[in-house]
Image 1 (cartoon, rainbow, N blue to C red):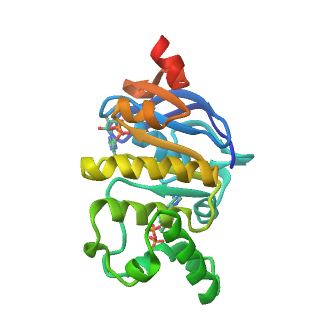
Image 2 (tube, rainbow, N blue to C red):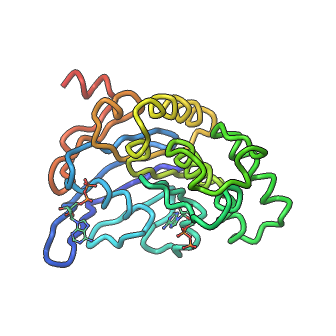
Length: 230
Ligand code: ADP
Ligand code: ADP
C-alpha cells in the first residue's frame, strides 16, 4: 500500500468551470478514505486526477514516491486500480477475460493469468467454475460490480480508486457487497479512496472521511467518530 498526497491541486474545465480549487489532502497508506459531498462538488474529478485520467490544472499529486504527472499512464495503470459506478466491463468478453485484461496487457503467461483470475474471482465471492465463462449481461448488478473490483485488483495495484462503487447495486445486495468489501479491505490492505454522496455509507466504511463542498473545498477530514463529534 502507498500513501496518496495532493498538494494545492486545482482543476478548471473548459468554459472556466472550477471543479477543484487548491485542494491539499494526505491519505495514509493502507487506509480506506471516503470522499463525500453533494453532487457536482468535484469528487469524481479529484479521483480521476489521482490516476491521471484527467490532468490537473495546477498543484502536485504523489502516489507513494511517484509524481503522478511525471509517470507514464500505462505504468500508473499497474499501480492504481480503478472501479467506476457502472463497471465498464467489456460486454463481448467473458468474465474471466474481463478480469484478466491488465495481466494480459502486462504479457503474463496464459497459465499465470488463469490462476490469477481464479484467485481474484474467489476473493470477491464468485466461483470461476460458475461465472468464468459467462458474459457480463448474464450477471446481476452486484455480481458485475464484484467483477469490476476483481479486475481492478488484477495487477495487484498499490492503490484502489472507486467511484460510487455501490450506487448501481440494488439495496439488498448493497449491504452484503459492502460487508464483503470491508473484509476484502482487511485482507488485501490496500489504500482505497472511494467516492460517495451517501454519508451513512462513508461512516460505515471509511477509516477516514473527507467532507467536500463546492470546488472540492475540504470542510472536514477525520475518522467517522471525529466527524460525528464536530
Ligand atoms: P461530483 O463527482 O462531486 O458529482 P464532478 O467532479 O463530477 O463532481 O464535477 C465537478 C464540477 O465540474 C461540476 O460542476 C461538473 O458539472 C463539472 N464538470 C465535470 N466534468 C466536466 C467536464 N468534462 N467539462 C466541464 N465541466 C465538467
Ligand atoms: P483499454 O486499454 O482496452 O482501453 P480499459 O481502459 O478499459 O482498457 O482499462 C482496462 C483496465 O485498466 C480496467 O480495469 C480499468 O479499470 C483500468 N484502468 C483504465 N484506465 C486506468 C487508469 N488511468 N488508471 C488506472 N487504471 C485504469
